[in-house]
Image 1 (cartoon, rainbow, N blue to C red):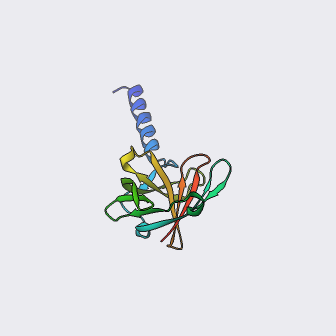
Image 2 (image 1 turned 45 degrees about the horizontal axis):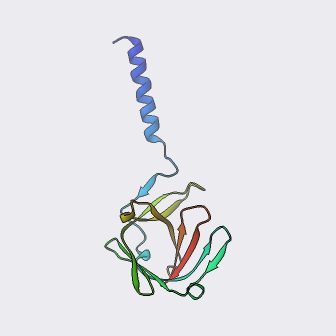
Length: 143
């Protein structure tokens, strides 16, 4: 094998190794385990956002909403006790593109993974869902 081929093989090997060792900001950390405190029934308190930063509530909108996250990976979303959305879901952890910290993402899998919310808890009794879009809403639920 001539020297030129050896150098090419060595260079390609280095490039492949360096690409595999880089961690990208959006790399999924895990998709098999998440905070079990997310599970259960959640009642809508308010949503705030939009381009005008308005706040909406069950009183202002004239309806209640409930989200139920089951341990079997099924999400049921009710409006005034009527089922409006049913989906398999997953909660994954990934690195935030803003600060590099780990965040949890709720993915509704029956919608081509296009329905995504950043999800977090406050004191284990407040669930917060963040729309993953510009001028999206922040939705607050309680147990």
